[in-house]
Image (tube, rainbow, N blue to C red; front, side, top):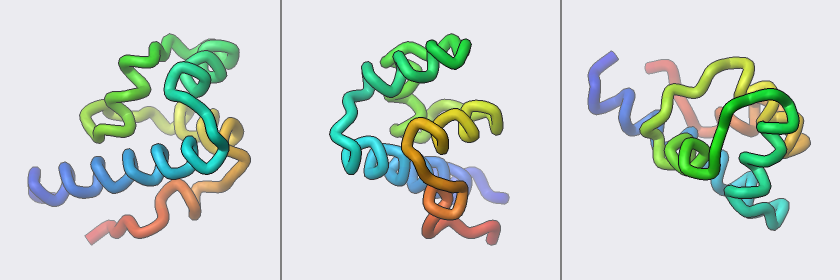
Length: 83
């Protein structure tokens, strides 16, 4: 995968996370706190990087985010392509 395509997809994933967070009227701080409750060392700053597409999100973190946002991976990855 080209670096440019990877960056576009990372930003799109981040946009999806931001849209999900906003749809629940949560702040980045609140999402980070929910991740910390689940034993992830995620600060608001790191969560901000997730939304910006500059942080490599682990699958375990995505599972936790799906729980926090009460959604599934289809929604989290909406609009993303493997191509």
